[in-house]
Image (cartoon, rainbow, N blue to C red; front, side, top):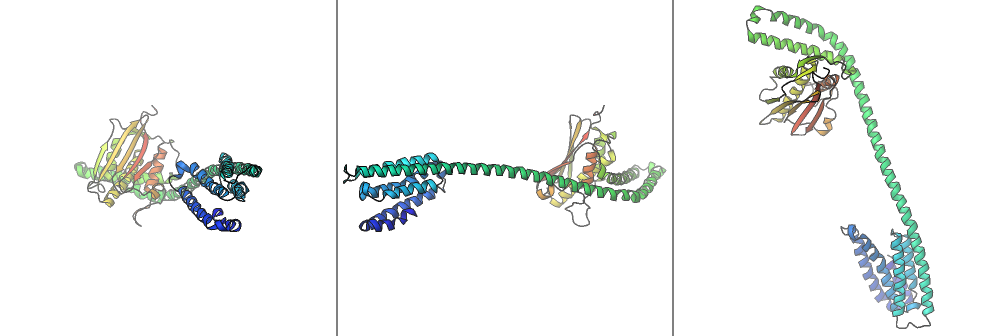
Length: 416
């Protein structure tokens, strides 16, 4: 804008040269525009300093040529060089060394233009010297401005960096507070669920006990003793009723679980898994279930409660597989001994879990099933049961591909 605005000066000082100088100014402005555009391209990353210096020196070269083309040391365009120095030092975001380089270049360009002028004599050398000294003062002031500007920019960058770090720390704090809030809400839900379960236990235990007594009497009947199929069916029914009794009991202590307080008795995890597979046999129809267990699966804990955990995980996996309608539905149950723990994983190739649901699967009453098809308590209760055994129930998933639940139990030799 300054280069093009100089047309008015040309018209005032040298009207006969106004057209020529106007074309030169237009050409120079076009090149400046191209250089400015280059700063917004991929060239800026490598040649930004060179482009910036060329962008600043090009107007000085134009003005020095005008000094040469007019009156040399007596040309009024020397003030244009000085104005360009001030503009660069005050307005442009250049560094201190770049400001010094621009000042030195401007002084040398003026001296060369004056010496090259055909009418340069000893009489006007003093004028050239005075103007050169004036340009030197302007260059010094311009460099000083660039030094303060550069210092201010560095302070601004430092402040921005500090603000960014503080924002990151604040974001981390906010996340921690959000986690604490979520934990407190979870505890409130658990407390409410515990109160509900206490009343539920009283109401359900009586009919469950009557059913268990009837099943025990039926198992002693001679007809049942002589019929292996009937005996097995009644045994499964008894095991199912014991599971109902265990679930209600777990609900009662859901909000007050203390990890590791109840080591329980020693049992064979393989046997518990077989019971869970048998009790979920209807849901698992048409699904290939592979089991990979170590030689010794003796663990310590509450066997009926852990059977309930396995039934819940297997049932959820079967539901996901039926919903996904896979050609080869598959559930993989795997257990590995690590130190004093037995790591158990249940993996299916079903629908997977969406990322927005993954963090909520263990919340009480959270469910993605249709209304009336689930209360959303299965995984919450399972989480509490595993935690009560000193372990942790974890989940990982790839939406539309697979889901894996994992938990760990204490081996029977843990406290031996």
